[in-house]
Length: 320
Image (tube, rainbow, N blue to C red):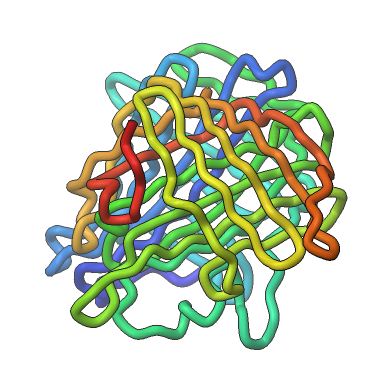
């Protein structure tokens, strides 16, 4: 695996692994990445960990020269820590914190790709100077193995996982993100990103919404010409609807307290966001035939990741 060299000023790249054990007593996010500042001295790689139950964030910083990656497959190594589609190995320790262990992942289900839509961003991936690109690597997969967090051993065997990635200059100024793959009906996973996207001298509301149901990924996105209602946001809830010609979703998320994570601004990890891992998302999924809606399923996702950041008026959200 080639060693990383500085050469992409004010850029970042990161991966997001969500881990939930079988009893749903523990939800952990592990976020490896690399931060390129304006020069090599202001650049580093990192591994960020969020314990969703204790709401305790951990941030481990490393020099660039311990970052290695594989050009032919997803395989990232940061010192003694490795991240792959089929598992992760962690050896994180400093004077105050420790996160160690190995996890193995079953086969995941990625966002569908095609020649003209290579991933979740679709044709927007080809637009120059986009702030941030986003990908869904696995909607849902099984987990085996254990992690030890500050002397607490967590058995993730028969748990469920989710993987996504982001890369670019920085996150949008405003966004609502949510995700869950813990519904009463097995095999359902839902992810949604709604954001303010700069475009030339103006901006627009872009969204990437994916629902894995019964082995099929249903996509509701800006580029598929789906339509979304202005989200309604209160201190406790987030509600919106989205539809295309064949299907529609009603989404009602219940917010939970979160913890502070670092986020990229001009490539540097100087921003702060609040993320929870124990929110919930209630879904109603409908099919539409000859103008008539028929309920396909209704279910509530648990252990949901949820972020609400920025001035919501920029994405047409209604604060109540």
